[in-house]
Length: 586
Image 1 (spheres, rainbow, N blue to C red):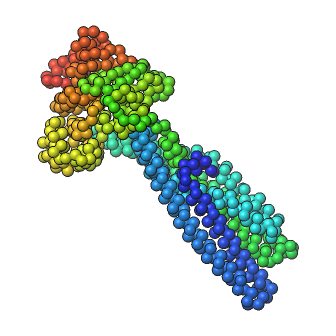
Image 2 (cartoon, rainbow, N blue to C red):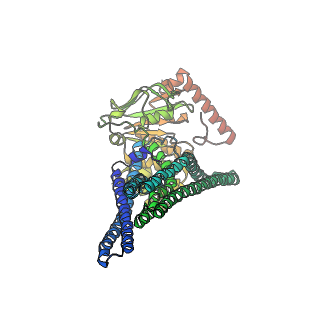
Image 3 (spheres, helix red, strand yellow):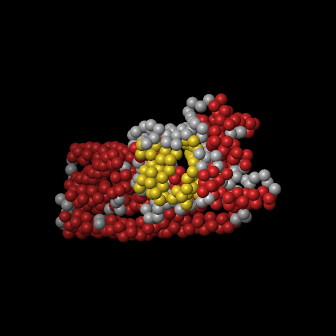
């Protein structure tokens, strides 16, 4: 019924919950004043009082009505303010958390799930904080306050009413254990259906090519049907619990009313007192009845809230305040594990000088991409250290480090915006001449010029350019950024020969004045490297120039020879001058 972690989540906004509850109590006291004024007027009528005697009850009634109106308006405004502040605060914290995580993943949360949690999940929490939470505290206070007022009139009726009140929260508690499971499943089905839909839309081309769209249609229908079933379970649960609460609320109020009538008939209650207790009896139960109605909305919000708490509790990457003094990168005895059990990197030591080209190669799964994650600051080693300019990476500021490093991969993101806007992300004051120079370097200027120029809008996922053009555009954007360290992680994977040649030519040119780190499956691309690290099973097995490694006749030489034979075989079979880039992999 009440989650302390969710209350702590809103921080200083808790004060608005307190203000709202106090206004709700004031509104309830105003209601009691209205009821008391009416009952006092009835007593005066029964006693045949003079007309002037009705003035004070009338004044009290008018004042109580005015207080009730003001309290209701202020309560509504404060709830709205609380909801808006909570949503704004949580959205900012969620967004800031994603920014702090930076290049880290969100620990298993899919993009669709992350979007749903940060958007609709926060909307559900709005109702939890603005409606359910104030109602929860008010519902705990209201019966006690009413009992204190009514016990002076008749303790028997007051005691019966108070004794029946706990039956409503008991019914809510009984339902809540089942409700938690249902709402957890509901949110899980909801996010999984969103994931499946997004996945299907993004892969629609492949589904059509493989004629698998009909099968996917069936799968989507099943996902939608599962969500429909869990939604129906939620509605059935809500209806059942509402019925139970209505029976308890009206049954308890009926018991109090019946006892008041008996007291009136037996003479131990005056008519005005009996009328007051009859009118007030339902007030004992209405707050908890409203709490029960808000409970189901609250459970849905609580499920989303726990996902937000889980996201916010992901440890931030450790960064310091020092400024980067040099650009030589080093891995010193680095040990790393993603799950804390199996080490992916085992005592890895590498040096990447401030100038020159360094390559990391090896078969899939050897740890190359994990090394990249270490270099870009996505993860911190379990043991050992990563240094830049002699300083531990965790001691320098994120802004300072990222101002010196750029990463270009096979899936570098190009935003759904104009070509110029994508360049402005890398350099705010970039000129059209600088953009043109960068595009000419990657042989892309003519294409851009003939297809809308720098105002050409790149569609979502860069679908209006080819894969090679996308990667060349990503390279051009990074060239404009003019960083000191460039990491190319499979930047020539699955693109045409022309694009690969253009990219590698720029890589070689940059290595004359900058630190260039190349991770590639295609070993022909790393032949010009000043130093090559060959990895196996998370360890550096060999290092040296291409010539030195070939003479050593170790794992690198065997891999290079095998790959070259495959490429020559491909040429003989197809008559092609060269195998497509990324076509033949180790």
